[in-house]
Amino acid sequence: MADDCDPAAVFALLDDEYARTILAATSQQSMTATELSDQCDMSLSTVYRRTEDLETCGLLETRTEIDADGHHTAVYSARLERLTVELTDGVYDVSLSTKSRTREFADAFTDLWEGL
Image 1 (cartoon, helix red, strand yellow):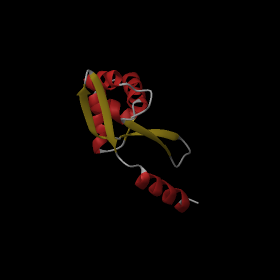
Image 2 (cartoon, rainbow, N blue to C red):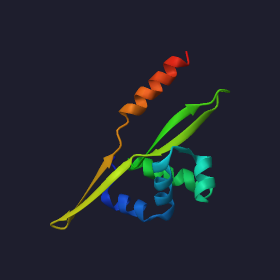
Image 3 (tube, helix red, strand yellow):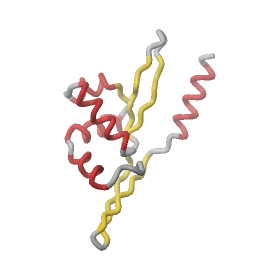
């Protein structure tokens, strides 16, 4: 979890229907903001606000894809695999288990190399 994201922020995000919908959709496949807007039936501005919040807490990641015509597109993927909440002596401890990005970096390098 990002260092600046406290348990209350994580709880608030996961209480938000739009944020949960984005996480669920991007856990199945990576999607652009436009694809999320269409599939999840929400405005682009809502998608951008929620994806920024989710990314801040380490629940979502963004990578940039470059189209053949040179345009850049942000693609979102869920990183959350498991969320654990413990309450001990009045203190919440929230820990996240996220997907490893090692394979994605290897794939990106291969794609880059092959594109040269």
